[in-house]
Length: 471
Image (cartoon, rainbow, N blue to C red; front, side):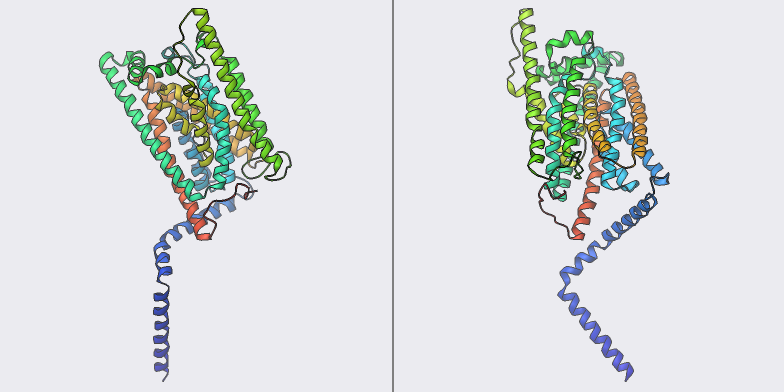
């Protein structure tokens, strides 16, 4: 009797299980398909929890932090050659390897990018090249025209990042950077072929002088001016003789103005420098001040350019042949605003986005790298100052990582410069940019996909949000 009763219970249980499995087939199939992914995420969460527990009393020296330092050193040395900050590599390294939360990783990244860009600025600010007519390698005119609207674009991009869902940001990031990486690789191959033709024609020793003429003639006469002379063309003679301190002063004023507004508003986590009502009237008034500020700076710079240009033409008795129209004058501000918006949206620096654009319009690779690193310095230093004054944690560790990136950037620059001199291949810079972009695309896309999967499993809102929900 007991055996029959047991068999009856087993048969009834089996029937119930079969009925439940048939009635909930749509629920069991995703579970079976997602089991492996859930196991992987569980292991990652356990690793992160273990690492964060070991760092509760401070960032102690641990194998994971040593590996983080080594990886950041390699990333900084690669990024420095292309004038890119490297934030697209630092954030995944800090969050995955060191298991830091995104807020701490973002603050560390600001200091690390600043340290690497300082090395680039030190090497490029006073460097003059015969290839550019004795001018400095950094094109200060592009930086002046681009910086106001790039800073404005970053603020707009941060708001878009708060409004857009995580899955949309990840998809846009992957598509845009994949296309930019492909275009940059094409540009690198283009420069490589030009250099190879010049090597075959004149030999490696004459490559630097011969490449400019062939490259600019292949690109177009309008882009020759952008490579060989600054946008404020009348200052060409004076800039060869002395350092453009006035342009540097203008950039510092722009940086200081936007820094004040950023400190008043606070960072993306709602930490403000002064108390104000979150998303209140005063908040939006101060935030909107960036729009007229960017317009005023850009309009004044363009007016100054026109005045100096016409004055030079009248003094030399030359005909005005540069009536290119307003569209060409506004190219760099519009491009910079787009790069800033995308940088703020994706949470990376603008250098990775504006560098391919400068290469696309025909700016020489050396000048593109130097100018981008110069612009990245102002962006990253403003973010680092903001984090510092708002009371970030683990300042000592961020300074150590910044010093590591500084040394790595110096080493990377020296190696790349020697390689360019020895082999006559300025296209190495372009390939360095494309390498960093490709690695950032893979790492940041995977990192974003994991966050999207976590949000989906936890039942969080996957749609658009209001910009003030984070406060």
